Length: 486
Ligand code: ARG
Image (cartoon, rainbow, N blue to C red):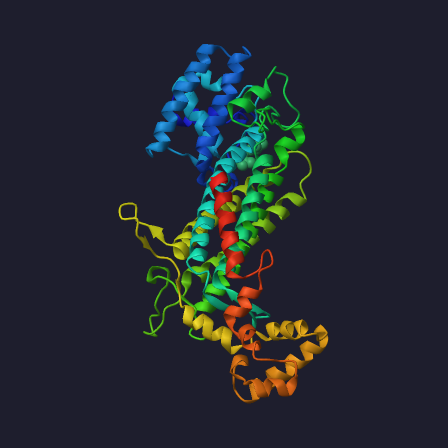
């Protein structure tokens, strides 16, 4: 049989059609250029389906053996880049099935018994996404580890904490890093929750209504590892829903977009901190670029791009939501458009997590154990910035409250003192006791302890606060948590 004949034959609907598709329509409707990356999942799903067909005696065990043999060779071909992907065969499913039939004949043609590409593609995307989620979770965990290490090395480093980007109160740089560890922790939770709903089996729904063959869907789910914690198979319970809804992809992209938003916030800070006006940090040269015209420049391209790429992933979320909103039950070809946004969201998030892990935490050389990369912290610049902004004003108010003033009066008194300091171009701790007493007589020598950055930090020892003692507790808690988790 010539390959042309085979291609025609493999299109199950072709006998009905009087004229061939135009080249443009072929290109427009095909998806193989991008969905071929689902090939592993496609073969895995097909093998599980075939095994069940044989077990149920719907196909013979000889046919099953042939299918296994053929799929093994196809996997090798694809893996070694020897597989010829054909646009004529539209998508990954038809390409693989046609090659199988070419290799093993009728056994290959029997594989599609009780199955449609509609339940096949929904299964493939779920299998593929499940593995990607696992990788993303590992990357998130590693990034969290790295940030905790950065925090541990910088517990005593004081920086200004901001609200409205105005200096607010002194905080520890470690505290700032740990805020991101929390955000990433919730991202991780979200991905794990999404995984539960991704890991359910559409196969066996056939085109939309189920099938007349005596399939054992739970057996297929078990083979594919689509089971819950107790080992109970997770099978989509309504065939119309199973083949048509892509909410699992939308949920995933939503979690991905949110995770990118967190990284984007960090990016914004890194860009600010790297500017000459802040000078808080440096990034290793390999994460920055120069300017072709201004020789003095080092630009934070990586964080800027992450901020930009966040827009892309947020866009993909909007794209997928919009893709779904007008679709009547059950499957519509619209759904073929789910793949590119989903793939790009996965790729963008994974790359971003990898690069940020290395940029922030550094990468450990396997041989030497020495780290390269990693954020370089300018503790002095941070401290000077914290001293500039009257960041201990709240501490002074709290001090006056302890001396018996109602908080609102204390607030007023401190506002006067800040004005005094501004007028004489001094920091709060540089005012002398006479100047302070002139505003409020209850101020005494012990005030200077609370006006220092260290004093301010140490005072904030409530759970979740920025005192070094509290941060050390948090670091211990996180490390214990990681030990149990990883
Ligand atoms: N390539 C298709 C997709 O991605 C596979 C399903 C095609 N089903 C169909 N009835 N045309 O959705």
